[in-house]
Amino acid sequence: MSSSGPQPRRKQSRKGSMADVPKDLLQEIKRLEDLFTVDTAKLKAIVDHFISELAKGLSVEGGSIPMNPTWCMGFPTGNETGTFLALDMGGTNLRVCEINLPEEKGEFDIIQSKYRLPEDLKTGTADELWAYIADCLQQFIEYHHEGEKLDRLPLGFTFSYPATQNYIDHGILQRWTKGFDIEGVEGKDVVPPFEAALEERGVPIKLTALINDTTGTLIASSYTDSEMKIGCIFGTGCNAAYMEHFSEIPKLAHMKVDPKQEIAINCEWGAFDNEHKILPRTQYDVIIDKDSPRPGQQSFEKMIAGLYLGELFRLVLVDLHEQPHVKIFEGQDVSALKKPYSLDASFLSDIENDPFENLQETDDTFHTKLNIKCLKPELELIRRLAELIGTRSARLSACGVAAICKKKGYKTAHVGADGSVFNKYPHFKARGAQALKEILDWDKGRDGKPLGRGHDPVEILPAEDGSGVGAALIAALTLKRVQEGNVMGIRDPEGMLKGTKASDPKSKQVAPETK
Ligand code: GLC
Image 1 (cartoon, helix red, strand yellow):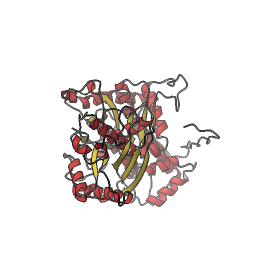
Image 2 (tube, rainbow, N blue to C red):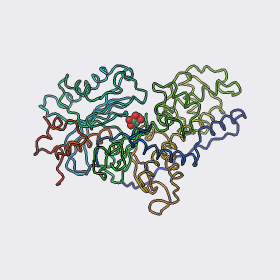
Image 3 (spheres, rainbow, N blue to C red):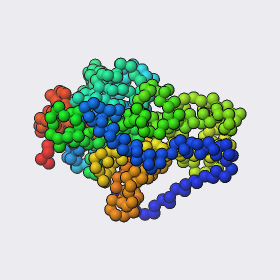
Image 4 (tube, rainbow, N blue to C red):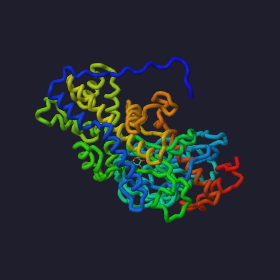
């Protein structure tokens, strides 16, 4: 896409002035800067360790990072056709989509409905969860296909939690992440209870592929950009997927697959450094972990993902208020600030986005949301703290991207990224790009031109809709493999075709290669 005409002027950034900040707060700001700043040398050390941990996750012994093979084997050609359903079980919403892949290469049509995922479902029972999801799917089909006689529709289910997949239509939940805590799901295959709930309701759907949001992002982005090498989510959670050769996956060696064959790996890199060897954790990161439903898990994610950014910020402010030598929010009622998880990442985004020199919007937000009246120096500290937390998140996130690029030997690459932090958090993209430059020692762009957007050798770009189009494409790629008799990593190939359009060789459900 090119744009012409006048370009918007660069948004003015607020430099901030610490001139009138008293000495005790200045000292605290300095202490926070030391705690939260990750310099170039540290970034490089993290990346080196990250690379070895990625390899360890692929080894027979395994490591902290699960490196889950997904049985999504290869990229789409752009010639896939047919109609698919996609279900995304995100953190806050359930989204159901119907995607039509037409004959025009790289195109798609989509209709979708969103259903709120009730908060208590996240800590409820497994039966309630599957019943709720099946009801939403039933409602979607009834609404969009009222009175129609339907073939069974193939479904790509985006289940964005770590799952062991011996097959693409199967997935044993390793552990809940992102604050979910539903009893009786961990350690079990999620597909049978999900299908049973559909069956009970007579919903004409066949699960074709269970996927992770990162794999969906990788595949959807590669559908429109052949340079896409990595799919990332920087949102409530944080993770990535990329294509790996079987030759590099000792834990799958027993399957004797052609070493040159590729398979998408869902890294689950949120678990990086669970053994606390390299990440510069602060006392606040330690508290977040300790008070979470799964202490000891997702160390990396807990330092950078959207679910935790507001909480980190809150913990620092509460701690400062409680230190007798730091005069912050003196004489104020801080009870609202003391409520765990009361601030989300958008609270920090708003502070970083405050355009006013006197931080008027931040002042207003603290007053309305937390009932705290801030003094000018306190506002300066608040602003700096938000910057520090947001910057650390972006710089550490870049370590994961750099590690995959270095492991794979990619000198240039496009990385498709999605998620609320990537899309909405101010400066996240620029801070990530700066960190990549430092880690990978670039001095000029991929085309010899100066570094910058469009020229950086590795660029993190907004992705296509992974849990919609990506899930549909992976379902299409899987059906195509079944049609071709290539059923490796597919548990129920016959069941996948039965009663669907794909069982009719004359149908347009998944195009033959000869196009
Ligand atoms: C968490 C999940 C992972 C997901 C990521 C982004 O890390 O474990 O599966 O990809 O969040 O949603």
